[in-house]
Amino acid sequence: MTETAEPAPSEPATIPELLLALQAVDTQSGQLGYRREHSPLRDDMASASAVMRSWEQQRNGFRSRIDELSSSIEQAEERGAELLTHRQRLERQMKTVIAPREAEALMNEMATLDAQIDELDVHELEALEEQSTIDDRLAVHLQGEEQLRNRLTQADEALAVEVGDIDRELADLADRRTELRPQLSDGLLATYDRKRAALGVAVAPLVGRQCQGCHLELSAAEIDTVKDEAADTGVTDCPDCGRLLIV
Image (cartoon, rainbow, N blue to C red):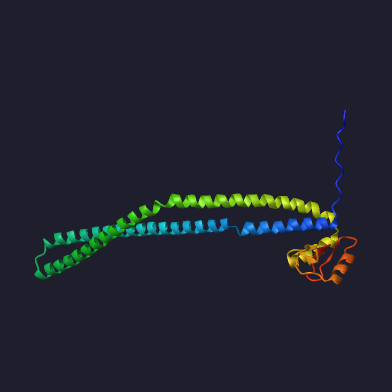
């Protein structure tokens, strides 16, 4: 029976490989974090929310005005009923009056009441007409609610899906970072963190004579120097930008 050969153990990662892998993880995490907070879907969500708020404000304005008009109509009806009752009382009183002056005073008072009643009737009619107009406008306005709410729901769901996907990627990257960092010395990690905070990208490979961080070419003398400095670890500092240079 042929025995299956076990895979050879993988070589431990070198310091340059670990640094490049850590930089790749942190760069991707930063890009994902930026995309999470500045996604165009957030703009879509904000736009849909703003439109919905504007629609609701207009709807509430219609309803508030209708309520105001209803209250005004009710008050006019109550006041009109009071004035009519008062006028009827004056009419009954007229039938018992004998003195001309008293009769004239009662007639003047009834005329004033008639003018007030007419004014209330006009006010009530105008309020009823305005209320009818706003009722019609509100009915038309309400027809757009479903479409706007659907748009808001779709924008919210799309954003939630994207944020969920990004958060899962960020969690995976966080796990990968947790694996990588303990494999580097505390001193090198402190240097990496300091340079990354200052420069954004802390690690760059040397390709030919060019640092891929600052994209400047090193002189022949600088090449010799960095190669000597990186002879043991494969890492030194770029003489131009200060990043950790993988040689």
